[in-house]
Length: 203
Image 1 (cartoon, one colour):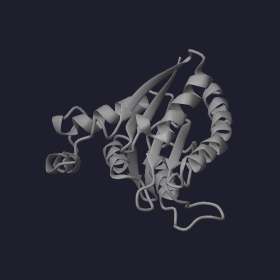
Image 2 (tube, rainbow, N blue to C red; image 1 turned 180 degrees about the vertical axis):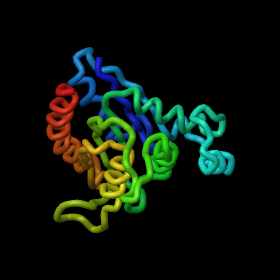
Image 3 (cartoon, rainbow, N blue to C red; image 1 turned 30 degrees about the vertical axis):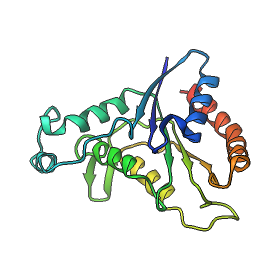
């Protein structure tokens, strides 16, 4: 059984075009062999980092310290899964606050990465990771009108904990009506399905 952690990071939750496409792809590829953990970061918000958390980090508190409980839960959850699927909107050129907070809990010194003179070295096992990015406008291709800071940031952040097998897929132009939405979903569906099936079933 392949275990997939599905993170839904946008405000539309189950109504999100990206979330519905992700569930469709997983269902069509799974054939009963995929187990999904569905974590909606908006419907079930992660608590913000507190001063107690920061003090625990600087004091090298043990992993089971109460101040690190949420961080430890999220890191353990990620470790227990064979693949990661992130469905996220682009908010103001980069990741939404929900996903940034998840990353802040998961990227933890001496737990998911170790510091070295050359920078962070990931301590987590690499795993296939699929990132489906939704945006109202265009940030890639010939119709792009804005910069994309999401992709390089998220790729770098995941790599810092050891996850380097990351694949990005775009749903762009979603504010231009139903026809534009259908075109975006159709254009992305086959590419996403092919990559998902190949990467998940080879593990």
